[in-house]
Image (cartoon, rainbow, N blue to C red; front, side, top):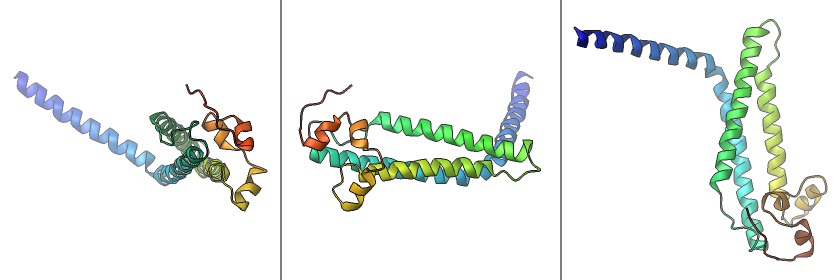
Length: 167
């Protein structure tokens, strides 16, 4: 009798879980392309940050180890979680709160995030890069080498290679 009771609870619980998962999937499925595009944008940003790290390591060996650290991966995961939450929220507001107006909020949110990541990629690629296009971009963009790798900006311009303390 007790075994039969647990079997029936298991059957209903497993059906309820599958039903809830299917409903959640159906609700969030339209936002997956936005998530994929944002993931590609942040992956490209991480790749260019790693390339910058390698350039800094070459030019300033004591300032940086040139490796990708787990805290950067954690920060990337947090950023992806936040942006996906914003995209989902924008999609839900667009579909359920303002269905009579085509706001395309998920598109705007993902597009804004990708634009910010594109600027970050340009900053990464132009920092500590001696090419003409990079020097031109550095006149209007931030030099990320100083900010991300604990290097004194004066060392970048004067060529000093002093030891830098890290956290």
